[in-house]
Length: 204
Image 1 (tube, rainbow, N blue to C red):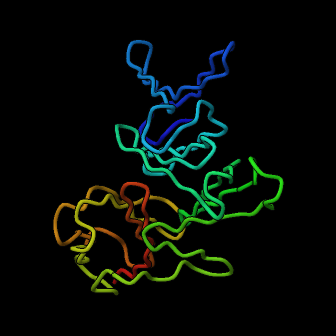
Image 2: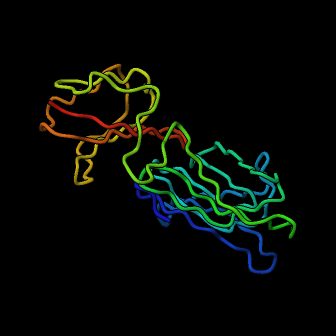
Image 3: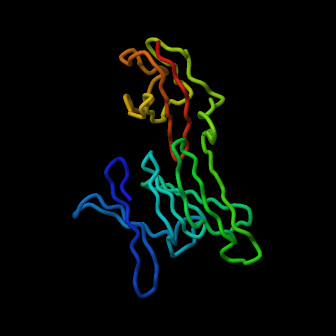
């Protein structure tokens, strides 16, 4: 898998034992190996799937579902039956929802099911647009700027109606300048550490 930052992520398997490592590969002389077995709450020697999120974070199937920020921070997810349930696949949709296929891998008594993660207030968007989260940007409609004080420290991207990213960066102040954008409707996406919020914006 290749992140938007160009970093390549590879699952490496030791052929005799079957033990797996996660490899962060930048070029022939710049790479790192991550052993998932000794991470807190992640006790698996195998990796069943690997997906890179739009913020360059990593989702792994290690029995349970694991999130990795690409540097040092790991987070483990368990679901209905705890460690008895196995995350067997993941898909990330256009709103940032993570759809996870769960099987009762360690117990035939448990049925398979699907879990959707909506970190940061992302809505499903089924049959319509993503709904506005509880911390809306303002003013909206906007002419020169939008107030984004609630998202300082988050990254952001602004997309036009064609799905083209027309502006992006880090929210490091209370306002983002949108004056250069043509009049129209946009989608503003904020993301940080596996969390995502999507809002609609009208530019006057």
